[in-house]
Length: 387
Ligand SMILES: NC(=O)c1ccc[n+]([C@@H]2O[C@H](COP(=O)([O-])OP(=O)(O)OC[C@H]3O[C@@H](n4cnc5c(N)ncnc54)[C@H](O)[C@@H]3O)[C@@H](O)[C@H]2O)c1
Image (cartoon, rainbow, N blue to C red; front, side, top):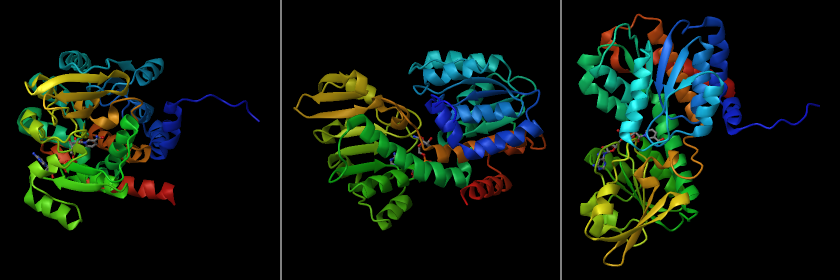
């Protein structure tokens, strides 16, 4: 028998990403990225390693950065040890993050793999010759990049707009992951608690379901009446906004939009409430405005727990997890979405980048969903491995 070996979480994740492993084996024969540089701007955490190693197996040279507040040093160290160029720091500072994005674009990558539109938004302002296009992972990135479509004018496939990403990650995995994050940050119970979820898109649906399954009473607020009706018919409470805030022991934003809970809501927030965000950007809960409000007596920070307590002058206090950053990639030992969901989503990434690298997609393919044949191919491959 071999000696027992000591492995890391990166190894655990790599061995759990069976779809990516199969793709990497194929790519090492077909080499779709031979001679190409791929610039990536996506959370630097262990699951991303499995994606990046798959692209490298396909012959890509990689230059990588992360997103705000989600860069894990262990992942950066691992990638550098593999000879991959990484420009990234764990930061919440937009200027510091911007310097890393500039460093990626200075390498003039042939393809970009973006998450939130950080790289493409910069490339739209400072275009360079021979960029082939690439992929955008998120809803928020799509919303941000759509107005820049004329400037970008290159194939950009939006992974989020695949039905697979919608149900495997946004619906099932984000819900599980935000639920896991609430427990991980707080060690508090969910049963008997009143939970309000802002946003009943794919992510909100999974989040609301996970907390309901954990014996919470869940209210849903969505700006769209049709979506709110859907939540109502799914059996959730759908009070008016003010009542939904007033009643919440746990309040979760997952809309993708700015200013969902602001200082104007301070009078409504329940004593002891816990606020957290699952949306891509940390602007859904206006934490900065809370800190600076004249109605706030003080702020306490549980530094190691990444929990902040806002103490109101009227005696109430409430808590914010991870400073309003995406909770499942913040706080102590953040795990992010499940490995299986990311294996699927990242397999879509690899196939979409392969499609763009092959050429044949024109500028009319700028900000379009994943082609249906790629969805079918990835779904069949996953099912084959699961049978
Ligand atoms: N945490 C993660 O791991 C993770 C993973 C995937 C996506 N996301 C992010 O989660 C966010 C939501 O993604 P989605 O796929 O569910 O988006 P979606 O577009 O499917 O749903 C968003 C919902 O929010 C609603 N909404 C918009 N403004 C609102 C407001 N002011 N009040 C209440 N509801 C409002 C919309 O009507 C819509 O129903 C995005 O920022 C996305 O990037 C996070």
